[in-house]
Length: 361
Ligand SMILES: [Zn+2]
Ligand SMILES: [Zn+2]
Image (cartoon, helix red, strand yellow):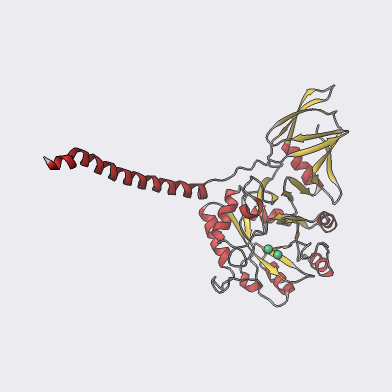
């Protein structure tokens, strides 16, 4: 009788059941939470709305990134996942050849980061281009060799020999951040010579957080392909925050969305540069692309009442007369604008001091 006062078998069983079920239930919940976090980190991708132009597909690229195999802070796989999540279509891994602070821990084979990136890219159907950054002092500065076969052969005393070897391998060579390490944005004799000899094919108009408007003039003078890249060493979130389209990109107008298609387009100069909602590049391509971004429906021809639909994720700001109008992304804007009236796009640049000007209808 005494025992029953302290020990009720029914209550004890219920308490034990409660204890076991609480423990196992919380374990189950922990497992679910863990899985959920994994899913967030690896499975979601932004959809960036940018139209194609006639005959070409618009491919969103970043041709300048670093990994732990040079002075970057992440693995090649992480760099690829990050770009996929950001909604890009292709990146190049371009580790420094001459600057490898983690070389005591990483593999001494200079091709390793490319091999790991390409293999991972293939496993998630994402284009990864093999590259390397030839890293020298001014005047020649830094140059990326893209679409290369063997980085080890680019380790040469003379940087021009390294460039020649890259070109022998079929590389597209671009001159990086021409305003670094001073802000003079100077083209030196060595660059003129290399451009003349077709050993430099492209140049960065935008790098990381800097843009070099003078490069638009160089593009006109020399025909160099214009590029805009992140030069990412840390993570995109570190440098640009987590907003959609926060990172800069080179828009490539390719005959097909493939490495081969991108390469052909780069050698032909079919690019625009997009950074912080600014679009810059050669006038004909810019006109063509913006024309595809904005559809116009005429409501009242006489009064000039129109509806402009912005089919892109770029916010366009237009000026005409005393009017300043924002064409918000994925929205329809109703405005009054006479037919054939030229409109200035204040976020679109075709030259150092020149904006895109064209009629909307
Ligand atoms: Zn560099
Ligand atoms: Zn770099």
